[in-house]
Length: 103
Image (tube, rainbow, N blue to C red; front, side, top):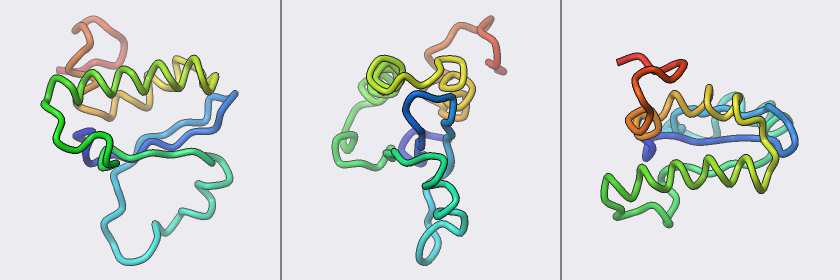
């Protein structure tokens, strides 16, 4: 999925992270209460700080957020990598021989 269609949720100091499509239905996501217990922090690719960015700058922001999750929030890098494989701009920036990249 495109970054602008994704929601990233995580719990600091853990390997709890997931990337899901932004909920477009009525009300809240059906599983939102359970997700908030396991993933108390989140942002989406539709946040105002990402609006109007070029494709290259969007890809750069995906990688900057990746680093923030590791350095600031101490989320497991392998868990982030596996979750971010759902984001097109992340995969697009990886070499073909990186684990999980399927082109």
